[in-house]
Image (cartoon, rainbow, N blue to C red; front, side):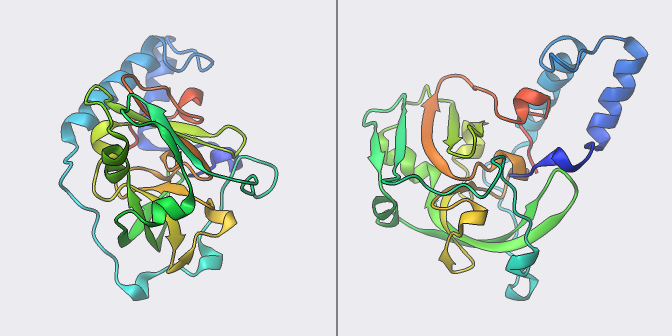
Length: 235
């Protein structure tokens, strides 16, 4: 997850949208999903979805490329590092045959996935860490996700932070619910006890401090997406 509060986000896409908005006078930043911006966002989503390859993997980085833990940026919305509530467990629901609640021990009993890949932030920086956890696709199998659930929503206890993903990205083999970082349990400053991580999305899509995963027929937006950031946000 990336917190753009430190300054104005400048990317090629936002520059293009801003220039077109000035030229056309058709944008209202308080309603990012309407008018010209909304049309461009829908076009961008369709374009990125068409380009997405569910079998393409982010390259593994060598061990020497690891970013020092103290140098890997830490972001959260709350005023201080969020700490898991007593009796924390992950709620899983939506269009599933077996909704339920999973403890961290339950998740650790599921098939584990490990990788060392580069994190890409919308602000322009990148960093490398090793992550381990359970694939979202394995969770979908466990709860019997309905084929009509073409989107997955992830919610957290970090001041209500959330995001929704397209199904192909959520079920990508490198999209995991991570409970470990660099060979040790996930630390609080990086989303403990459980966070979303993937090789196919920008950082702000990777919800930390997870409380719920919902398999849904429609997307539900996201914390930054509701404020105008692009919804697909593929790497």
